[in-house]
Length: 423
Ligand code: SF4
Image (cartoon, rainbow, N blue to C red; front, top):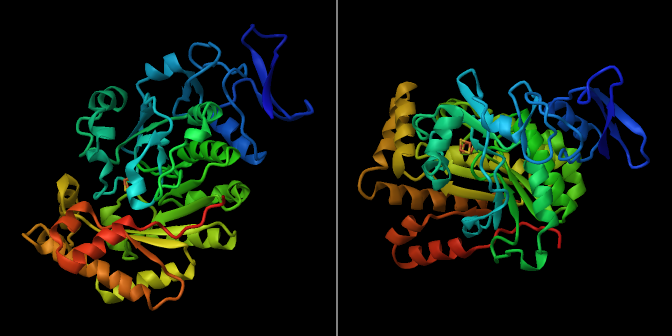
């Protein structure tokens, strides 16, 4: 399917009606004169197709120029050419500042093969509305090296402290992924033993966090499936179930997971202030189970407040959705993000939880806690016949361990996730 524009005989040269036509040139949908990006992306979903929006006769809602390459949209969905998009001040709603993301990267090589997750990542946005306190993303170069851009585009003073309050969308990413994959020489596709050539959406944001991000994600996933690229989706958002029709087309070459560090709703709400509650995430996985889509759980980062009963309860819920794997990692107390967790707990009046978190920063405490929790999770998982735990012991934990424990951790680090992707 593609777009066709028809001039309005009573209007100016730019006054055109936009239609969606199929391969037999039959009109399947009429959009009026200035369809919004939202209308176009939702039409893609309705007709289970992908419409390349470059060079289709669409025009910028501000300057009237044709959209022939990069584009974005205003908050109300009206299309912007790249010149107008990059000079836009953006908008703010409910404390969240949004704008177009000028980031050029499309498909980036990733070191997440060390966690047996992927060899490439696609990030659909810069920033994340969920604003998880423990999130490591704002302390990575992906954010740290973009301070100036974030200040220009979203008035961000401190990318770390403002995390959760800014979100820059890569609206034309499906078009760029399409172009990139068409030009890819798959003979040279990076395929490590643990990454297996997988592309993951997204490592630096939540790719289903809202409708606009979900629309970008759908377009990218459509392209990956079309090119038979093994794909992993990681999200905290139940919105992911809106694309089950598309996931079914991947024939087992795609897996979807969600992070559920705990089922303690109050604790999760404090540490992940804008993310959906853990049970809503679990329900999304359950829907994926019913639809026959391969699933995984990221039991990460688990908290020092958890005892055997909490772990057993969490693993029981996980077993019920029959995941291919449960990735596990205890929280690491390094960096400003950990301080932000302690502060959030204190501000919510969770003194005893704050004190357990704080204790991890004392000499030797964290390694003891992390090793004990890793063992506990692996041991309790053996009580279920359908749970495979894939532990992510950090390099710093392996460094401080000794003897057989060190060897065990090293082995865990070399492990390949048991997930099956289609050949
Ligand atoms: S959902 Fe993921 S990317 Fe977003 S803030 Fe939370 S941990 Fe970070």
